[in-house]
Length: 116
Length: 118
Image (cartoon, helix red, strand yellow):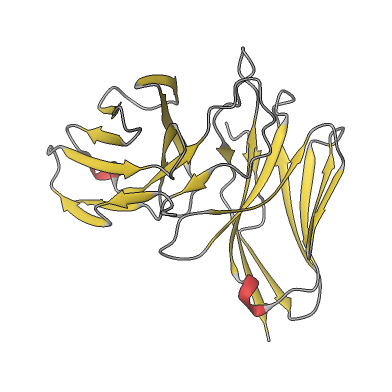
């Protein structure tokens, strides 16, 4: 049973427009959420994260929104650029007993294509 | 500052064989996690090593084992390879976060080792 779901395998957006990538989760114990970007033949690269005590985190063109009641988060990229074309993974984590952060649970990813 | 390095980058093995993958964490990091990414899937957690001990384990059979050395580098061993073990194996390094703020931006992934089992 998937605890983190990305229901859109792909998304195509025009350059300059907004890209919105969605992610749903089922485990209410998750307390940290992250977005990773992955190019072919490279490892995932950290993009942005959000703690469960917040509902928004912004870093330049990237903003992550968290709706805890709906167990839903989204990544907004504005404006989208062709270099943003990659696979985006949503991931979640919960604290272990003792306070250390647990392992990451990933979604299946969404392939974003930004067309010039 | 070298990031996370993994070796080999690609390898082909035959069913039933054994494989060892290696990982050197980012300088200053003391925790190594291994993930398996099958085609079309997200990375799946295999296990995590800290202070040379397995601290957490995901839902993988005992054929998957690991080791962490005093210099924090790590190995992933897979015995009795199956066709379904064909995947990208990712190593991630981080700092133990006991009692510290954790913002997620301290986890670094290597480029991975592509394993093909034929």
